[in-house]
Length: 304
Image 1 (cartoon, rainbow, N blue to C red):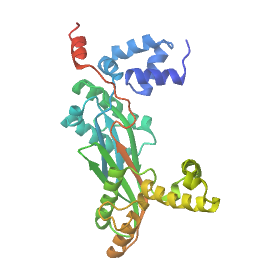
Image 2 (cartoon, helix red, strand yellow):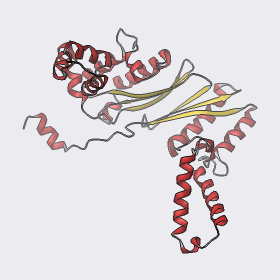
Image 3 (tube, one colour):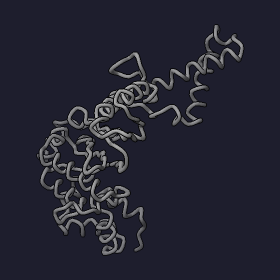
């Protein structure tokens, strides 16, 4: 029985086992999904298979600079308690070190990369599932290999932010500026870094909403089109201030924007600082958390 890449992906999602192991199992099983799962169980992966379907929406968002490489990472677990577990935290930091060293191009490459103890990251993840007893998954990562990166971790791993700067100054000199920007990103979660990044479709949508709002207001509806366009332009300025990091009001000093703060800091330090990129990971972001009745869960475990 033949199988496709989608079958391999389906087995991976069902089992939590790496793509290559899933492909090998399906090949041996001649495409039979149930038989492939049985093969994986026979290889000692039963525990991770059993837990692989459970929702992991807690865990840790992490950011660090390792050997000059900026790394942001999210690793999920099922409970907040495990997110604070020493072994889990060590695993997260270990994966970050692999990202910095190996510079994988995607998640599959990361999971296949050597963890540093004779196992791959995928195999180490499976080991963590066995040791900790929860479904654990490396979800996403980002790296910056050029410029100066500044990491920030909020609330012990709830949010991880990595800011990447182009600068003529040293990493030590720009650390405070980078951290201030990272804290702003953590707190306000801007949609864009700069107004120049706002695409035309987003602007068109905002203009459309504003015009509809004016048409529904009798006082505004009667105004000339040129006046309406001027009002829309003014309101788009407000949109930039609310949604674009550099145009946002600087949280630490409301008298200036983030852009003005960076320029002022660069002048004081005697160099140039330009924000090149940034990434913000919030643990469990976008993952639908399953609501369980605790009493029912216990009853299930007791076989009642």
